[in-house]
Image (tube, rainbow, N blue to C red; front, side, top):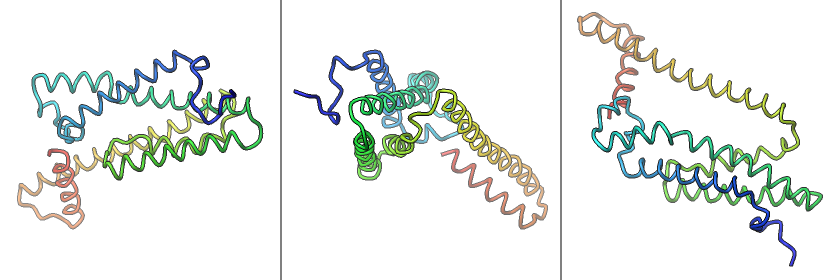
Length: 212
């Protein structure tokens, strides 16, 4: 009986090493989710986390943050890309025309639907299915790019992401430094300008959001 292209890959065609890595990444993500579900969510947002928890809870958080937080998401993202390439390559070898694209995009639309369900019906803020589906929808046109071009493109997007993160950190740093200086002026009963009052309110709001 011929194997359907839309069905799961037969056992004899699977790559056990990739399956093992995917299982390892899933278990690591499960551990991350247990931490965020079993403890208050502010543990992942407060700047004073290390002072908020002690004992076994602190060590569990520290180990998870050092060895699993981010690492497992990165590994899972790499495997998502590898799985995309393997799927498209297998489909294009067995079928010509638009059917490979049709199957690929239908799978991603199902993933998108599950992501929306997970995020907006089950109300899980840590959903990754939705962003993976959106990212996957953009990958198909790049399937035939050379490794060199893909590497250069990844460096380009990495540079953008690095700039964005550091820009946010710099904004936070400026908010803190300005706010502390203005607080010092206010404590001396000095008159503040409208701009200084706005900067002080921004700093107070920032401090309140990061000290819950």
